[in-house]
Image (cartoon, rainbow, N blue to C red):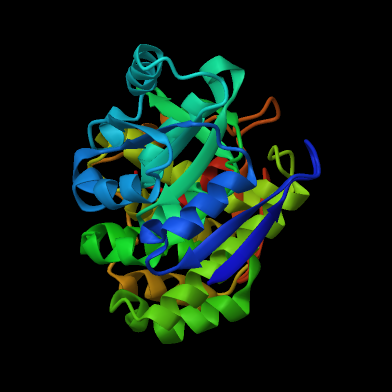
Length: 363
C-alpha cells in the first residue's frame, strides 16, 4: 500500500494520509484501524449514489459492522450538486439523531465528495469526514486538499468551505466499474499536474498514457501517487488559496464557463478543463511564454487521451466572458488566469489583454 501524507500548516499541525491500493474498502481490519485513528464515534453516514451503492455499499457496510451505519443515497450527477442535496443529508442525519461525534463518509466521485464534505463542515459546525473516492478525477484531485462545496445556476462551487478529511482511502478496484468516458475525463487532472508542476511527469505520461487507459495497475499507482504528492505539496504551502495553490486551477476558469453554459453534466468536468487547459496554453503562447512545439505537446497529449481540445462550437466569446467574470476566483483587480511560463511551471497572471483573449476564444 502507498501512503501520501498531507500536512495542514495553516490551521494546525494535523496531518492526514491518502492510502492507495487495491481492495482497501473490503479490508475490515484496515478500515477499522483508520476509524480508530481519529476517534470516528459510533455513528457513520455513508453518502453515495445508486450506481456506486450497488457496487460497493454492501462490502463497505460489512467492513464497518462495528458502527451504526446510515446509508444516504443521493441522485447521481453534477446536476444534483446543489444545496438541496446538502439539505437532504441534513434531514436524514437529523431523523437518525446523529450527534457531533459522528463521521460522514463520501463514497463516490467528485460530486459526492464535494457535497459530503460541505455537509460535514456545517453539520453541528463540523464533524469527522472521510473521502472514499471511486473515480480517477476524485482520486487525484477533488478528494485531496479540503475544497468542498456545491453549485448554483450562476456558477460552479460558489457555495462551499475549506474542510479537510480525516483520511482519504483510494481503492483502485473501483476504477474497474468506472465508465471509460469518466476515466478519461479524470486523466485530464492527472495531465494537469505535469503541465503546472513537473515536466518530467508530463513526459512520463506521454509515454505511458495508453497503459493508464488500459488500467495497468503499476502505471495507475504511480500516476495517482505522483498526482497526490504534487497536490499535497502545493496545498501544504497554501491551504486557503491565497497564492501558489491557484496554479491547480489551470484551465478551470475556461472549463467552468463551459460547464455552466452547457448545463452541468452535459460536459464532464475533465472534458471541460481539457479544452480549458488548451485555451490556457494558447494564451500562454500568445504571450510568448511557451513555444509552438510546447503548445503542440499540450494538444497532442489530450488528443491521445481522447479528450477535447476545443470548447463547444455554439459558445461565443460573450458566453465565456459573462461566466468567467462571475468565477469565484475573480478579484478586485480583475480576473486572474492560470497560464504556463513553461511546461512544468504555471503562474497566476493578469497580464493578458482582451484582444489576446478574444484571439483564443470563439468569435
